[in-house]
Length: 75
Figure 1: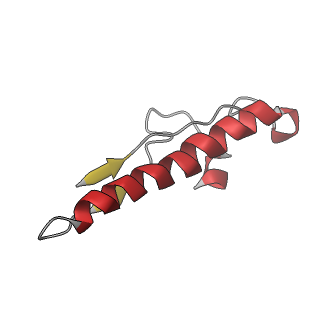
Figure 2: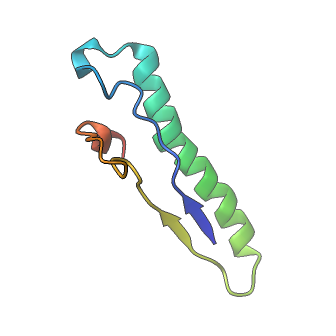
C-alpha cells in the first residue's frame, strides 16, 4: 500500500499575481511531480507482488482549519 499525502502551497497567503516563479515551481514540483514519482515507484514494486497493491492519494490541505483556496490548482 502507498499513501501519498505530501503537498505544498507555497504562496497561499498572497494573491497568485504576487507569487514568484519559485513559489509556483515548488508547488507544482512537490504536488504533481512528487506524486507521480512516488506512484511510479510504488507501481513498480506492486507489479512484482502476487496481489498487486493499492495507492491512495489524499489531501490534508485545510485540515487544521486554515482555508487553502488556491490549492486545487495543482491537484
